[in-house]
Length: 137
Image (cartoon, rainbow, N blue to C red; front, side, top):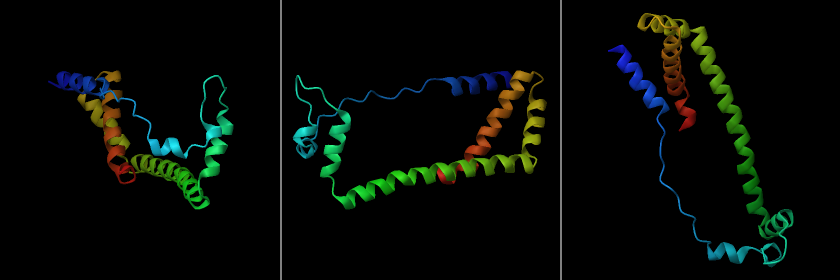
């Protein structure tokens, strides 16, 4: 029974998840109109991506540019807090003795070391997912 359960869990973990194919969206005419002529690609002319980017950014109002930059820089803070929360969760798992109990439970379930590692990993993944859920939402 336990072998069948572990096999089903293993297959669930490694089963590929298929997403529907996404079609290429048609170009929005408003976006096309906002791109300066200097930044547009023309047949026979080599496009310089840096010049095109500078030309487009010159059309963005300063307030919108500042807002975009602030949004972009906010991603750094999210990464920092995500790392700190992950470290705190893992330290909690170690300090509270949960890791030892998960190891002991894995040893009780199976005698094979490779399966013990898998059972431990499943438990650790469940605990870290539950404790890290507030930041992931």
